[in-house]
Image: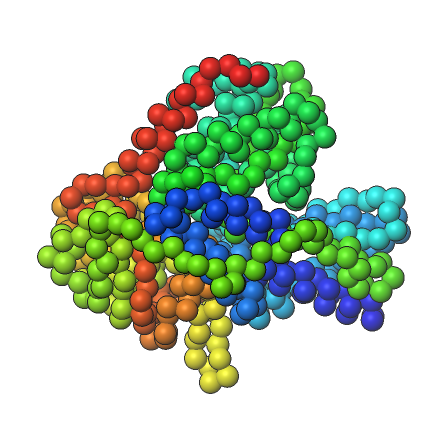
Length: 511
């Protein structure tokens, strides 16, 4: 019994550390990106926000990003260790960390849409066991959010790729697929990011291999010299695309690339890419199988960058800093243009996938005329008085709401939408027709934005679960950048077009 209690505590600590404290190698990669960025740009400001958020998450022992993802465990056990006990202990640790707001309740029934509330469900969390001859247990955990998970991509070779032409069944075709995978993620995956690549296998084992690469150290060298050369090439060339942090443009688009290879059958040739955001939350521990205690934490080598007391980048821009308080008038919105930095005070309402789907055929529970909708599924907890408090509240990827957003804005008179990664032509047309604006917040900066939220004034539609409910938030100094305006301009479309031109220069055979 003492073993199981200790094991559960060790797993609780593993989940908490993974969610709230970025590993040393990831911090060093972000530091390198900050040093390479041009001062005074939107990308530099974004990296400042990211580094501030890392500090706040560590200090608050709260989630770095509000989307704590789908917990995926890889467990290596000595012969004779009871894997069923470990599985039960993992589930208990997941329930406990969810209750303590270290994880957001993310387990949703795919048929009913009901949220279990504790991150347990059919197939969740994902736990994969492997037996080995070592005399200790190793447990790896990755928390990969939906925004970056949705930018995973798999190629079946040969294929035709936009900007790059034909990719054949050889190393050069693999090169083209990986470059394309980075380009297609744009800012929707919370760039600058990391990728794991799996070459070969079938559709499922290829993705497993790709995700397994994300457990490698950012600074390691591939033992296969061809793949080591390719990994270095991909990072170097990807950072010439100009996608940049959050898709704002800039020098840092990709922070790491790790590639694995396995055999395949003659008829199939897959290149599978697992894209991970800058909030690269993965950790591993070695555990004593006799006591359940942690005997070693992984990713502890080298310098730890704290990001404390670093000089902040001031914006050098001709665009304005505009303060807005809802309800916002059409005249105020029409005065905004792409590049303006907006600070919002007062009320805003969260709304994600379930809310947008609901509002297409129902009345809104509140008057949304002139209001601000925030694409956000926060991590929430109740204080001692029973009042809701926000523990983490960064933006979710907005493109999922593209089928609804324009119609919803016009139907209810919404003037501003906040999210990350931008939206498409349907929303852009509605912004122009209705007089609306899209504001890009910094993806993953869940502590930074939670600090801007001074109170929770109410909540509606809780039947959709905590992440999908409509929260009424009272905010101060909530900062975001206008990236789609009411005049038909979209920074996201501009960056996608210019980065495609830069991608195209790598169409010629290299390997």
